[in-house]
Length: 434
Ligand code: URA
Image (cartoon, rainbow, N blue to C red; front, side, top):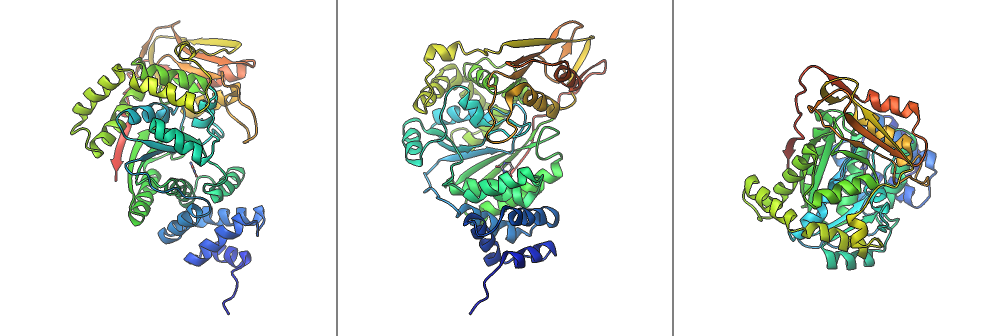
């Protein structure tokens, strides 16, 4: 008779940097989900993976075991899934999804909540009453009608990821490439999409601080995709400055709706959306070049179809806001402060992480998964990297329902400089691999 695999045996192996077999990786995931082992034993394994890493095969098996830990959805043809590794002011899903749906490229998307300094699409949507905690049947109904749906990770889908992610978050073991790959790819594969677009953010306000680690991550995701017959397309994008002008929850919805109405003040946000969308249109043979895509995207936005699509979908998914409410959407924060420029020169963000952190301190982020959020808290950047500012001009607006303390303002002021040296505008899309 075969010996039963025990957690102590597995821990011993991984702590000693030995490779786990497929059967051993599957057993670990199984024991974790069936509550046969304690959280501290799971954390010890996650720690051992954090320090010793995993081979490609181990990472692949971990991904598949996590995918199979819950329900998996049948592939819906031509549906795409898009995932960002997380950043500050990242509202790409809110803008790209209705645009894709209007180009007849359906999106079935599972999103997350914000934790720490990075925001989460689910929190942003909840600020306008969209309910993402819905059954898979309801999600399918909304998807069939709107060609788009955004759901929260439910306990039925990749429960192993829910368990591991919470423990990684509590034990500072998030930043491990095999753990990030398995977390993201297991969720993508469980949803059944054959076309996965990964927006891999690089910079101080992102999980990946440099291109090397982002490239390592992308290679493994693409290789897993190949094994699973799924196309994985990775864009590397710059997170050295927040994406767009708004950082927060409702404030990002307002910026997204403005974008969909054709009013986009942010060059970096526009560039990213246009490049990602153009690549997808070309992949789906709806355009032959970037310039053709640009004409099509401009025309589509002008038609207001994506804007109306967002509202119809939001209403189908529980938002009670009327068309008029959407067009007059405003922050209702009790407190507002404006930071003006102390001198003339060029504006440059030094740290998007500090801006994300400031929004968190203003009440816009959650300390743990059960804490509540101030949806009106946020920061509006009136300038982007490289813009010329004059002494005394408003450069940042700060909103919150709680007190905007001198400490928070000081931190925001330290997140940028006004310099006499010309600031080079950085590229937003740093590369693409597939
Ligand atoms: N996003 C995820 O879904 N998982 C990770 O591990 C990191 C970012």
